[in-house]
Length: 365
Image 1 (cartoon, helix red, strand yellow):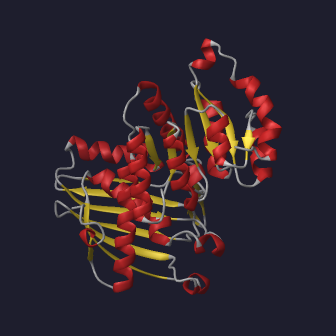
Image 2: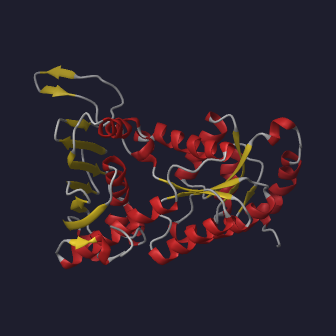
Image 3: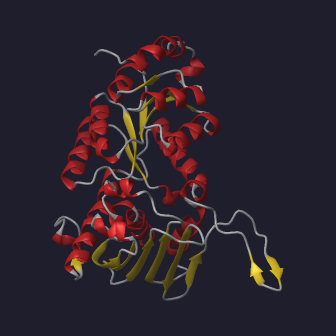
């Protein structure tokens, strides 16, 4: 395979770095990161600065300047514009896929066929058939495949999970999840996002299964577009999903694209013996008392700040699975099911009725 110019400029340096053959280097988990945007850079920084037993040895981005600049910024020895060059020449044990959603499935399959493990940011794809094909390929070639749902690793949500598992709440009866962004993304992003249910609520669909320990069987979704530009592209910016679980328990998922007071991430699990709730994270605990009342600083601004520790815990978990040859905590099926729920919610919204999950995927409860 002919290398592109960006690969050529870094490959010589990469070869001398990666062919040391010392025992220390051989113990490292060598990582390639595909996609050099903000989430890709977050993972690179975490791996190279905070995880001693792993190293990013190559980055790839279809924008040449992005690849080269990120490689220089984080002292990564190799950069390229084609993910195939990363897979073929960087001698990686695993790749972190942070590229646009429509590229995920092909990268996953290409890596699997080369025996390279994969961590992929959500969603795997927007189409269920494409997702299933990618998962089947990872299974066929026996690689480890983990999907990025970082909220599972957040200490607040972990505490809710512990309370449910301990039995201290009794039987879980009602779950409320609030997930509201501080500001809407650009319209150009929304056009290719897959809509609010796939792009935003997908995290909450995953958290609903995770916290309740059971599947959703029915969704009734309502919503509207406050921004006329969002309505013009056929999307909505405020949504509420009423969900039913297998046990008969119920839940509410509240999403909004814009929250003027900051990033709003709250949850409550109500049970037959008690309830547990979690609040937003704040940059400090200061409270200001004045004649105008009680004020405080707003919550942590957005997901990069709010879930910074969770992203680190998530990546540490993936690397431990590679080193210890264990199953990943969030596998391909865990990545597929929230996309099914997103399709159920979309169908419910457009048809203005509750929709059973089996209508979209008969294999699910």
